[in-house]
Image (cartoon, rainbow, N blue to C red; front, side, top):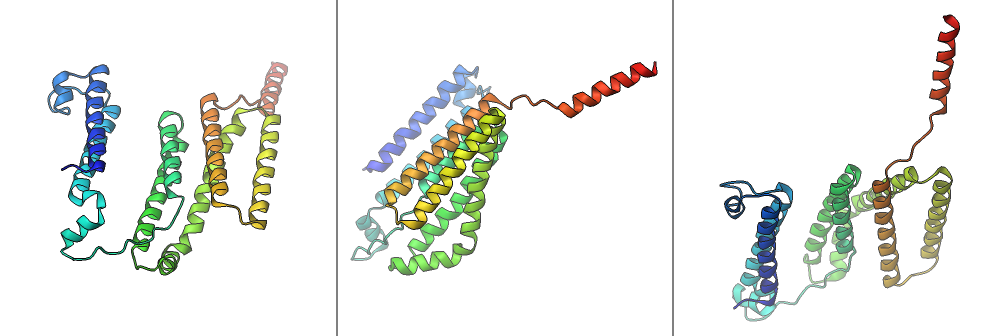
Amino acid sequence: MLTWGSKYLLALSGAALLGAMVYGLVTGGDPIGVVSVGYKGGVGAHLGYTILIFTSLVTFALAMVGIATRDGDAQAMADSAGVSTVPALPTLSSVYWAPITAFGVALLIIGLAMSKAFLVLGLLTLVVMAIEWMITAWSDRASGDPEANAIIRSRVLGPIEVPMLGMLLFGTIAIAGSRVFLTVSAVAAVVIGAIVTLTVFGLAVLMSKRDLPRSLVSTIMVVGALAILGGGIFGAQKGIRDFEHQGVSDGADDGGHGEGEGE
């Protein structure tokens, strides 16, 4: 009997496979090549077709895992392990890795469409989040004591977590901000820079003075991420504004006058 999770994953796998077939045919692929995954004939646009095919394969594999583990049901896992009692479930720590991972995927998509800088930044974000996810998943299951698990995680990841996340944060702000500053006029860049600086400073002072609710902190992070993404998209789409090189033009004019006088 199929589990609920496996049903959804199988439906997503079938939809991705059907989408790959339709996408291949629409983009000029050969019907036989699309069905045979490029073995006999063309598949159309390779990038989109490959992404959809891999999505279908990955979701199908996850569906098989869900069927084998009964979607991680505790009683089913206890029966598979041959034990009579269901083991206690560990308390998982609440972290922000899921929304940050989604932010990294958004940066990756923007980079593929507009700018290589965002592409590299998105890849770095996903690599950092993969490390965070792995260490968090391991530490949450190290013991049955959540406090001991938190201590274990801090000892393993503490020395590099703050510098790693700090560099990622400031790199994201610097790249997105530079795209905005290079797009708008000089006066607008100064105004935007002043507003952003005062906003960040005010939030830092507020968070240092008061213990803000977790929901409010999450809202601030979401708004900041959307602002960064919006600014990056705006700057990458508009492009860099024209700069007047006054010194070069003056040198060229002087050179022209000098040649005229020599003649």
